[in-house]
Length: 170
Length: 438
Image (cartoon, rainbow over all chains, first blue to last red; front, top):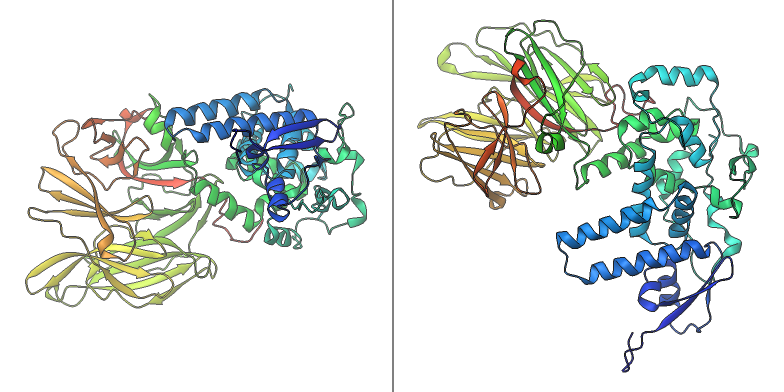
């Protein structure tokens, strides 16, 4: 909401590691949780909003994403803007190692940013689709609860699905 | 079932943001099905799973609170539903809970929905029924990626496996639905297969004795009202003397009941010798109906739920219309109307059953080059408007803007010709038993 002088309303967010981020209202409203809060409390005070589940590193990535995508959407939709948005997303994802990627997903989920979450979920799928079973277990932190015989049986059932898998070097 | 990623761990009620709701997008009906007792997994042992399981936080270098190393269930579901079928088959090995998830009918449906709505068509493939140019008796069914046909200089193809007699010339693709394919062998034996899972099911034989001048056509579709896949078999035979024309015996096979059942016969003539086309829970055949004035080409639809027949009214094709072919284009009933050998118009019924919704999509010219044969109904139209057909012995692409044809090159295709082509998707739907853990 702009005032006559063109100043946009700012909202302050406080992360788990006690850093404060001041963002334009438009960007904060991209966070479903924040939007819901303000919809239900239109007269909320101007105190900083605590986000105890989000680190400052994550929040700055998320803020950059929302800022960029708001700008993309402001343009008329054309295939070149779509390509730009896609390239932006690809670069963002490339810059995240597995741990950061997981962190950002959890933060985007907590903040209820559907567009970003869908994009990240697809990015993880692309990252793991050619990986081995062991890699996936490590990625999601899952223990193998099969007996060796049971696991061997499943592998034998669909041998071809285990061929051409990326080597586990990361 | 040992639920490694407990839903409750993620809601963190003691960390609520004022009155902000922290409910993650949850698929509540999914949660309920997950708690079903799957026969293959051990009974759930709740005492085993601590709220923040230290064994899962292998990230000793992470400065994050440990709950962040656990993904809530619905995120795992979202990620997995983006994966190709082959990856999911492999990841059944990750843990028991993952196997339960991947084989759960709710997940199979969710994965299918994502596939059907994928704007990039990454899981779409083209099934081709090929004959061997050297040895006419040898037939084999292969598949290629749809995107590869449009984009790759040479398209790879993979063989489809199902029991087929060597030298059989009569394998016919009946149709596909949700990743399942129906193949009829010698008009007698029917297979339902999912080529991506490499699973097939042979339907029980009906043992009809062949009579002179008889033939059998099939149709394959999905009846959403009972969540069931059905195969329809129309046995057409000459009754009494030739003057009395043809009659039909119609039977329906349902995957859930695993048996054939007779239903009412075709009321308007009998279908032409082509498989029925599945649209919206109905199967549609082209029929020649004999009347005093002669024969007319009409479309008859069989409603799979009601098991009743109706005629589907056609648009006005105008003067000069000659042979017509019935097909499906992107889920809509489609008619290719030829005007001699000059050109063909392609019509689609955008809203099934509504005559006013017939829309002429494009006109394709017949040219001696590249092929002089009639076109099939179009299989697919790409985002750029290029149309995929099957004509003569080849797959063909036509660009209506440039008015240009091109022929995709399939690996080794000097050795074969294409008899039939059909689009299908890669899915987890299994023909062996709908609810069984495969």
